[in-house]
Amino acid sequence: MSTSHQSKPLSSGQKLVLVALLAALLAMFIGSFVYRMQGAGLVVEIKQERAPGKGGMGGPMGGIDMEHLRELMTAQEKNPNDPKVLLELGNTFMMMQAWDKALEFLDKAVKLTPKDIQVHRAMGMVRFERKEYPLAQKSFDVVLKMAPDDVLAHYNMGILLKHYMKKPAEGDAHFRKVVQLGGAADPEILKGAEKELVPGGAK
Image (tube, rainbow, N blue to C red; front, top):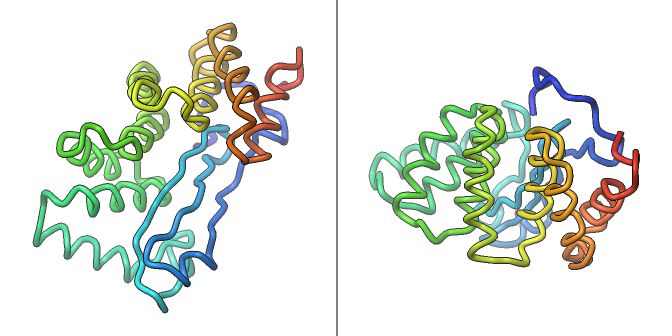
């Protein structure tokens, strides 16, 4: 998230960074990594397709594979209604912090695949970055209706409600759910939720 948000800084445990599973991206067609919004505390899992042998996240534009981006744009021009391409474009522009452009593609994707959890989660992140907090909450609500035990959605909802919508009790309820679910095998998510539940621990 950009530094323009007027909110008290989170603890070092909440200052999450971009984590890319480069080995998986190199070895498989489908890679998966967790994109952590810097300074915001929100987290999203992003899935991207890459052919074996292609490079990982190296290159210009903050680590974005620009050749792959051009390929995606070409594919989208040929088939404007391919939801997988639209989602990947949305994810890519998210990493570039081009929120308006990301929203453009994700808005199309969510209309084509209204039951795709990844699309709604990404939409929530973009809405959050645009400071459209009620709309971000709506997106995360959709995820939780489809997957009540989705740890990322609970964690993101907790951050959103507690730190940006001034609803600490509601936010903590989501953090307790994250702890109950054991952070879904993500120690940083679990640690962050536990700190949020300690009085003064997230300051």
